Amino acid sequence: MIKIEDLKKRVDELINMAGQILSKTVSGKFGSSVPSEGFNEFRSASLSFLKNVFGIEHPFYKEFDSHTIRATPYDVEEGRGILKAAKQEIDGGWMFTVKELISAEIFSDFLEMSEYLLEEGYKDPAAVISGGVLEGHLRQLCNKNNIATETIKDGKPISKKADLLNSELSTANVYNKLDLKSITSWLDLRNKAAHGKYAEYSKEQVEIMYQGVTNFISRTT
Image (cartoon, rainbow, N blue to C red; front, top):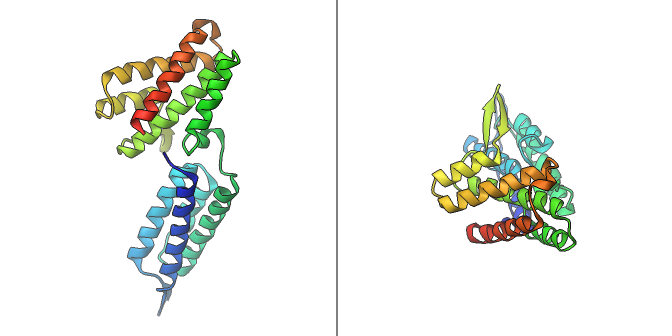
């Protein structure tokens, strides 16, 4: 499970990498440049980090992608500035939308929230939260096992639905068919809750879902 401290450490490493590349700046007839190998490593590693943490639609990712094109000191400085802004977001705790939270360090917090809601008799939000945590974990498993979580439609990246991720993870033998069937049922319950079909499931079923999701994440983290 990704920890906030790990994110802080990684963004610091990338910022330091930019400094190391800038220290190797050379001046030529057509201007200054930096080593292309180091620049490409910095660009690729940074884009991967920003994608995994913030997503490809976030301004940090988009700006980095469009402002670090050439192996020049200017482009490296542009990229470093964006990473420093991202670092401020991470350090200050401002990076977290609900979607991003479930893909970072707080799976347990959301599951505890779901448990509390169940204890208080609120089965419907508990089902939505547990299902959201499950989907976030499926996406992490896909990333870990080199399974794409997006597809391209009309030239634009589109996130795959959780049911498809579940199928592809099972096909890749990340987990077995029994897990596949359980996850399918949990996702179906989550969808019913999210679409207001509250009479189609019981509190007991949500409790079983909560326990199942908790155990599944514990086994596959």
